[in-house]
Length: 230
Image 1 (cartoon, rainbow, N blue to C red):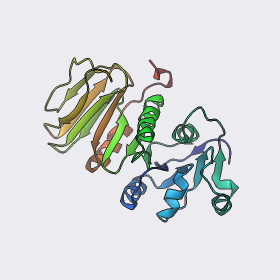
Image 2: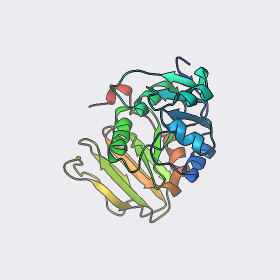
Image 3: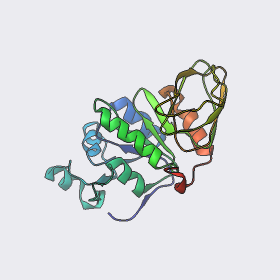
Image 4: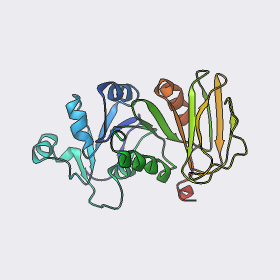
């Protein structure tokens, strides 16, 4: 396979990290097209799902798995300058991507996934860790939320934000990864409104908010591609 893999519906992207059947099924119910990032193909197949496409340097695929999938399901990208998560996002185009299997016991893999979100501000990508949802906060986000739900914010670079519907206001706080962070806040009402002045803030919510978050992300404006690294 070569070129872009484009679909009109959401895409579930599977990585090679920890993944349960429940997490994968939750993603596929909302994003029915299945793509694997390299070793994620093994994870998907072990849970009974054959990916439509496997993207990456493919160094984790056995000869038998390559033969079983067939060349039409493989998209080989040789470069070692970025992760398989980055490679996959560059190839697949969809209204949104639900990424699963990109966290777990390997902390470096989890951190790399958060870096990928920040490096692709123009894409609508939600990471489902099985316990939490993580998304790069768009310029503005407006969503219904369960009162009392945990709302965590973690800056990947200096960034300013405003909020409505949080127990502890974040307006005017100088967020930075080596300074002020915003973990373990709480929704004080049934509506959450957030803005950010740069593509550098990660929003983390419980998985129970997945449908509200997907809808809100689809409605929200996206950052321009040239906003990355500002």
